[in-house]
Amino acid sequence: MAGDLLDNRGRGDAEWGWPPIHPEGRKFGLAAVGIALVVLVILHWQILGWPLLLGSLGVFAFFRDPERVVPQGSDLIVSPADGLVTLIQQVPPPGELQTADGQGGAGLSPEPLIRISIFMSVFDVHINRAPIGGTVARVIYIPGKFVNADLDKASEENERQHVLIERADGVRVAFTQIAGLVARRIVPFIKPGDIVAAGQRVGLIRFGSRVDVYLPHGTESKVLLGQKVIGGETVLAEIGKQGLIEGVSQ
Image 1: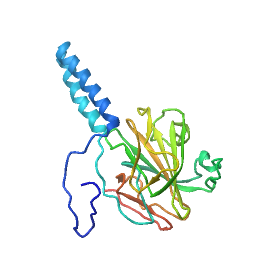
Image 2: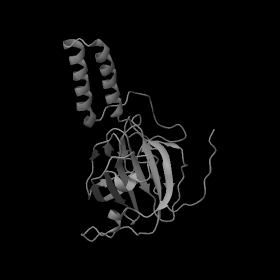
Image 3: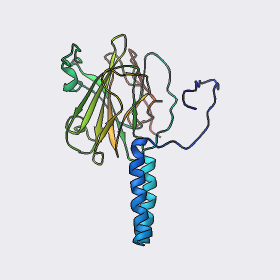
Image 4: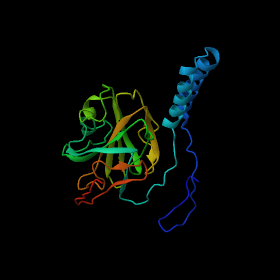
């Protein structure tokens, strides 16, 4: 059940179940079913109707919202998204986050940070989660293009939304939701001033996209290029911890 405390010594209860569908996706799934039924029942186009009906199940599956077991640790940064780690680079944080917010909040330093880019295909869960617990300091929406989210330039050219979360001790972690070729809307569940827990649902991106995470200074990635990560569960980094990690593809 949601909220149960589980640990790595077998304490707690866990069982498999069908993941629920997020309310944001129910209207799309029902619309797809409605179109399929019209084609099947009214127009009698069997060759088209059955594929449409199967496709409507895919729409429901896209908006699935499974429960996640979030690792508990004051310095852990968890993945905000399901997907494939396609880029790990040192880059300056987004310019929109470097400027002061006009309300006394200072921007991020222009010094390069490690950015972990997570590509979400249409088969991944698209609910995004908070990488750390704290106060939502900024939510900045930027209109833009819809080039392939797997490309490096998507971070600067695509429609995107920056989110900055600040802990009580002043440590800040930023992440950016980026729309892709098919994605056409970023849906936030939060606003500035909200207090969130690590792993809490904070938004979604419709139909294939990417999330960039900017690690704080002095923090290095604990995931590898090409690794599959799970939103709210995979630990991307531990604040203040450094050290090279290598892996073997096999």
